[in-house]
Length: 479
Image 1 (tube, rainbow, N blue to C red):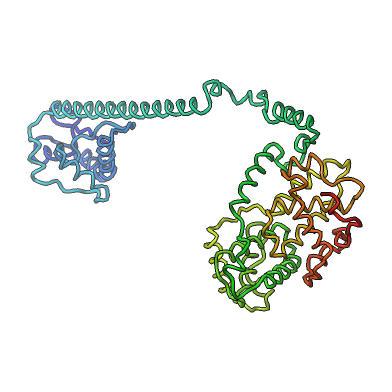
Image 2 (image 1 turned 30 degrees about the horizontal axis):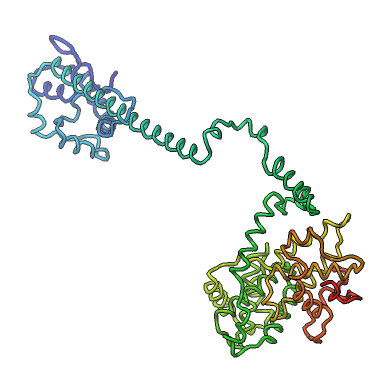
């Protein structure tokens, strides 16, 4: 039995009419229904009224949006609501209404009592076909618009790709990636190696198997770093021009204490170098009192630890290391002040950044890498962190001087500088003279400094006790 209509047995004829129309005819005596069929009619009206109301709402929403949907035939005048727009909108709000609805007298008047069943069915079929045609038209229009937008987007993508990559790059498929030669490995590296070997220079990037060395891009990276070290360096005269309550000796004591802190918490050397860099850059722009100098030191090490370490010490750890001289709130507040003053620029090249590259260049002349050379060069470079006077030297110059003096300390039979080191450091022997002589004074401790944290650190066996090594000949003869 269909939910849209109910078949009634009449005295003269039988046909399919709407329930509302059947009710009106039965009340007016136009149709004689049996008691059994009348009971069936009432039961069906009660059970299907709510579902018919929801179907009316779905049909109205589909017609308004123009979206395709598989729907049944339009219900035949179930609600007795006229087909104008106002009544259709009112009909869409009856989803939560009760299943049994009252039919107004005005709605009853819209349907004539003696209207033939065939006329009503024809009008409803026409309305159904019209709604379906409108839905198809809207769906076709929406598809055409989306297709046009997709084509326009593809055209723009093709134009951008052709401008940036060239037309020939567009025809390469993913499956042919393995057959594409890598220019840096197959073409540029041999040409570069040949050019360097003609000048007596060993190409340290040609046979490098360490992924962290970025051998393919290392020359470009270090060229960029050499430019950056000129832009982000501390003032070399801030103690004389800006600071009045602290001295260079106080700065040295602070750095020497921070070396012990870094050993206590097993921090990497990059953290120590960045800490001193942050301190000097902050003191170059901000006046600080003597009682807050240690606070600047711990805040700077906290910043550097967060930047360099995998597991940085907590704020409470730095408060504890100062015997709770400063509270957690004071350390965090100073951390914020330092970062804002430096504009969060922490990607700065330090001496350690260049030292890795220069030690690799020094090992190129050895058949087996010399571990003592690496430890001794790191020791000499860290000695300069304590000295305020070494701010006048660029980090790259200090790193080159440390490698120069370390090679000379380990072997006085050969000149410590060669074309390979000169090429990768960009310094010749004459340019290193001032820094190397000053660095040798630190090595020999000619000034009898009492700041010995770095010396004690590198006297340990794990560093091959390189702090005890000195050269028997004067380095002055090399210049």
